[in-house]
Image (cartoon, rainbow, N blue to C red; front, side):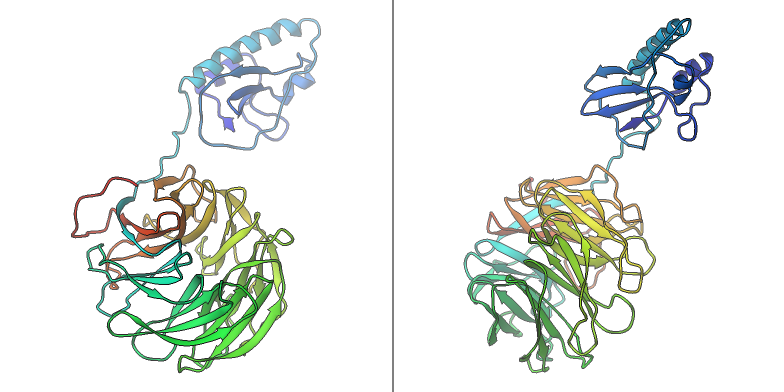
Length: 472
């Protein structure tokens, strides 16, 4: 961490004929670097040429200064003759000015993230929810919620009232350990259908939507084995949604849709180490759907990009190194170049990785950023209206929701804005009270440790509802 010189210190150094207060090139400013509350004064390279004393002034204090910059570490070399007195004076000056700077002389105030959300309400669902998805189940124009509950082998449906509140859940017994789901119009009626990845039953289960907001059981397809993630898109250009399923035993399985709600077995690939998530989009603009898969096993720690052939098959993948144990991948455009970028959430070492797309299906090396303790799921969108993509992340270990505001280049302002959640937030979705998208989006979390979903409304959202509830 680097603290720039105050004007008074510049005057002192100019008076002492140190030279320009700049760093880089052949000189560098007398600078202050903070490392774990220990400050060091580093001296210009000019002193080395003049054979001044070797060393650096260290002062311990409890004073935090935000911001950082690269600094060339400059030290004072051994003294001889008349330079000793000059060096001692400079040390005294540096120490005095350093204390003055620590008392508040900075050129830039610390960043204060905007407080755009507030906790609104929580609603009970089944045991250990692992996903939460927003949709309009009964087509009444109000946003509804669907969760997969891996601990109770159920699906929870919460119908929205159009004001940010929801009716009590309806639980459906489905399959063994539903881990994730994808929504789509798989049988071409007007009601959204659900396909579940049932990790405990080694199968994929289809549920058909009905007009009353409930679902009826459809076909099931065995897989080998332990499906962990699922996504849908049109892989072969027949205007019918298809499926890609990530299997825990290092496999990716394709199912091709028929348009009737049934599927046929497609290609299967064995690659990577313990896939944890899948996402699909056209990454190179050729009209063919491509695939991104995170591999969370210790032998990989990468996101794999599979380019589609347009017939339900994929070419051999290209791996991009992520942080440790990547858990989720999604697409966005961080730098506003109209090219898809990647957001990858890493489950170990509290980080996430952004990859800027080049436009041909390849990506620049990833950039790691910090999150709170135990990030598990994230999504990207512009929350503060500055046309820069921000990131929202739920953190399992610290039980909070972090909002990081983007700079427009795949990096983020720090610190983030954190909101306390119920125990064990596991998944996240954007949320609007109606399907008209007339208001700023809020967020809803799936609280795995509490058997609930929690709604966080955007302060720009005009909801007709009770007063703000206390934080969880």
